[in-house]
Length: 334
Ligand SMILES: NC(=O)C1=CN([C@@H]2O[C@H](COP(=O)(O)OP(=O)(O)OC[C@H]3O[C@@H](n4cnc5c(N)ncnc54)[C@H](OP(=O)(O)O)[C@@H]3O)[C@@H](O)[C@H]2O)C=CC1
Ligand SMILES: O=C(CO)COP(=O)(O)O
Image (tube, rainbow, N blue to C red; front, side, top):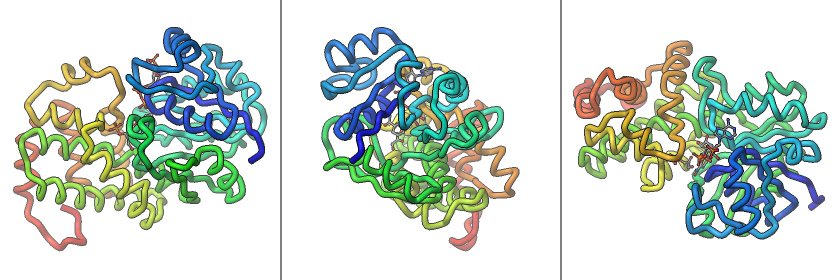
């Protein structure tokens, strides 16, 4: 592979993990805003705040200076949470070279605009090829060396194949896809269903309940995703069904964790206060409901999760409400 220089922005669990994967293939610089994180990565090859116990590759270099990471980069990878994404992209704009592809790792929507991260990239950096890397990819498992598969989605079939080589490794299988909208929305929307599943698990629901929520949840996120321009088959793939399974069943998922704590009757502010990491579904839920309304798509599970997150319903009431709704044909919402 041609030696590309890659900049990964965001020193959290996923930015650090993806930078570690890229370091196996080519030169990579990780930009983190936190000076202690940068110092620890460069001196001890660890990021103990976000990936405790994990050893990072020796050749992974971190910096506090965004210019140092971005100005010579052939590819920029954004691992910044959705509500801070645009601001960081504004700084990227000062330093990025023309036509450099920008890949989003982020699984959220901008709250006040409802925009996907690749739409924000196109707005802030017009002309740069955009893409997403997504799929069932829990950071800690990948750092522990367990096998996983993801998808890189870009419109251009030649660039996407080149970038597939940047991320893939023996234990991280990367497939290509040209459906950016479907792949990106799969990652965003499954987070809300994972909160719903967590709410059930926190109340002691059984495996049948979890399976029903995952299946009906997949149906509703597919309806919205297709209405917004995604391909139905994308939602049966790694970015849809695959990520739903990982996030809705793993004890590592932050979104499912939020749901479990809500299911136990705890207060949302208290739950978020205790967490050091982001739970994108909790942030993006109002934007998702606004899109469901705009596209006229019924999303009963997401709607109930949204009401609980907003403090307008308790998890136990929402759960009972879901079960009370009259069931129609399996192909219909509800
Ligand atoms: N973790 C995972 O397994 C996966 C996560 N994702 C997605 O990746 C995205 C990032 O998540 P993840 O890494 O897990 O999040 P974490 O909560 O682990 O880390 C968030 C990181 O973002 C940094 N950050 C926040 N705001 C800014 C800002 N304004 N400028 C610079 N840095 C900022 C934080 O820096 P600081 O420490 O200084 O606060 C921190 O390094 C999310 O959208 C998530 O859904 C996707 C696949 C897997
Ligand atoms: O997206 C993820 C796994 O694919 C991570 O999920 P959480 O953000 O819920 O931890």
